[in-house]
Image (cartoon, rainbow, N blue to C red):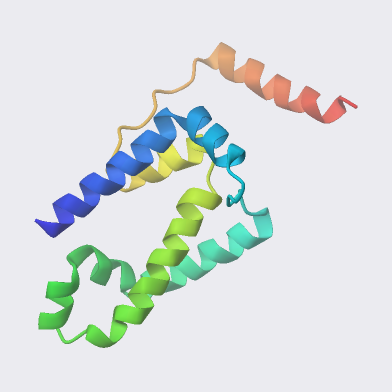
Length: 136
């Protein structure tokens, strides 16, 4: 039951951020103190740290909940799970733009994948990206 509630809360938070990306961005930037996006090097470091924590089994402990961890004798991992949650939050909310956040929601099973881009529009978008480098 706790897993369902946690996933539902995560889905609501991430869904609201994706659907109201502009609104969330405007509200966050209008506040006197806010946390902006992190630079690429910090995000890469956080992603490596997150992968190492997943390899240690911290994500599994987090997903199964504290009751399961207590019955399995894994209470000693609680501080590490808290650290995993902090890293996961930074990656989700300070390293990802709206499309990356949607990809993460798809990975977690909280959203359907986006439909493929029409080939003509994809070519236009790629051409626009190339031309962006040539602009002053």
